[in-house]
Image 1 (cartoon, rainbow, N blue to C red):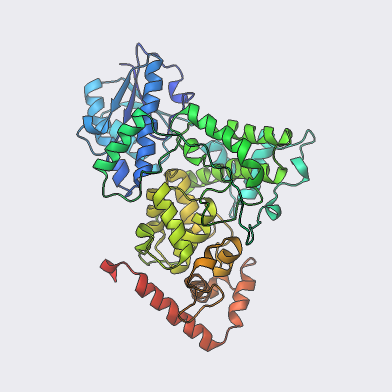
Image 2 (spheres, rainbow, N blue to C red; image 1 turned 180 degrees about the horizontal axis):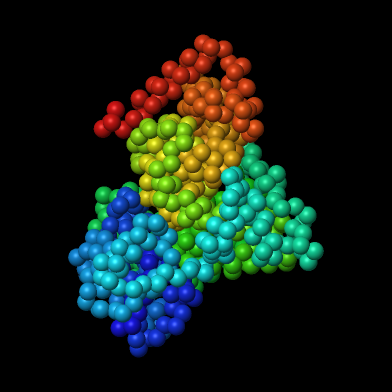
Length: 514
């Protein structure tokens, strides 16, 4: 055997550089269902299922080309870790060389290096051309920047690629972003009719995976009853077109809105397919831009959607590789609380958290405001240790791969990197949730109150957060007004907030650490 081509579970791209020069007479593809990948983060059943089903479908597509795939299925090999399974296969197959695309996790990249070194096997790590910006290009852009900002990166990438740019090198519509148009709430009437995303009912391969997951990973969180994700490239392309035709036009104005009976709203639900590499970001962007030019969707929706991909998605990947492995242990705010048990059970009287965690456990999905401004916000205000928050997000969402999940959690959600990812912590009281959703209408707590039996825990912890970090943020240009509002409170009011916050932390502590 000349080359053993390793294809990881989030590299299901039939145009991958891993296959450049592939010769089926000389080379072989290697894929592995490693149980430890499902257990090192206590993964949601749907997260395990989407990876395994997509991998098995990809194997079928490769074999249809006449390419040999050494596929290590869960029940067919004795190894828990991918590294151990790979080492065993190298010993048997004796390839002269190993090829792999840049892994999506620092841990896996180091594991593959270690395995090849132990086997004295030469290996080549090829760039992942799925992405618009390479890691090297991002590092060049970072240069000596002390305070990198996504907006600057986003504009540079748009200018380089010409996406949503006019012939005069100006942004389409005359503005670089339309954030000010994309913060609408539904009001009391709610969203009305929302087109449901196209469902993909499990075929025989997926049914086998669902049975395997239900049996082998029975103690893992989440449910499988609603599993309807696209797990092939063909279905992913259908899902993309469905979003463009049905929901893109309304996406922008309502991308930050939340409604308790509509967990998906106008969001694309394409992140899992993109992170598995079943969809290329270029084709997703091209479809959205084409809809704008065809007058199917307004500029504020198209630009807001494009920014999530060409801006945030590429930016967080660059930051991940630029800042690892230190990112894992960043804790700029000194947060040390354990993760409350409600994150695994949804058992709480806080209606917003109950609904967001319940939907997450049911579907393995929540849109970005539910993640950032409900589950993430509460963990930030509560003072949960960032690495514990990261472990939860990595476990419960079907689209979670560490390169994208970790910077969004540690950096944006928890501000644990001290401002590398974003310029300020995303903090708010319960009034923000009341404004952007209907959660508070069905809750026993009052978002306007910070103390007393009806006080909203978000509001209590918001003021407590400002109080605990007053010195750090007193002169912060984007938080100074919030600190000044804190200073207007009477000393006895602050004392009452501190006491109530302490009682909350004690009441919500997991029993084994209480």
